[in-house]
Length: 280
Image 1 (cartoon, rainbow, N blue to C red):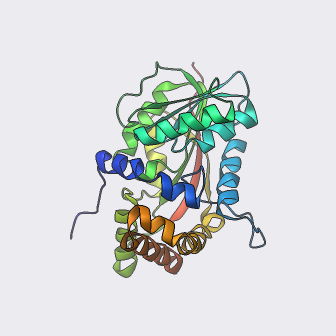
Image 2: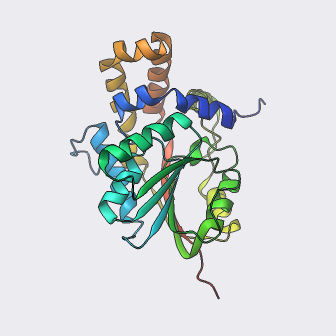
């Protein structure tokens, strides 16, 4: 059996260095999935992506006295929304220099540069923060690109204060991939530079091994499933502009993997909240 595809950090960084036009023309300032509360929810993809950010903010009760780490901050949309909603100070880190530059520009434009800072860092290496720096952290659809989730969780746990909270989202394997599902999943992961999906038990084990304990694991697959039909619609609407940046063949290939997601109802999606125990 062929070994499953695992992206390199260099490939992921290069992918996001080139992805700003694609993300901006589809999900706006977010590089994560949308969230629709019901079949009657009429939100477009940008509104739904903000709704997912809001659902995570609710799980991360912080205020003006708190400092939050955003791991894989992308274009900065979630960090800026979090700071504006709660008054918290936010440090965003991302491996892509292009994403960091754009995030800083957007923070200046929003008048939030005094409370939201962005820097280039690899979450799987040693984070450039002292132990116990942060009251909370979140990882919004960034673990999906990491070849070593365990290393990243260990680093996040190190920089959380005792009593600190981690909120993360991830794709996960509900049951083993075989046959056509396996082939479609591999196509999706190669196109989107995703690492192999963990099981819920496997991801929870990584969190516990880092010294954190999960307090919530929720399946959001139904709420995010409309993401891929919406992406197909936008890829068709924006085809000429996107083809100018990436080529028609690449946009057609991206639409094909979105169609696979529609056909299989995957990837499955979860949110997990975990706490670092208070000091004894």
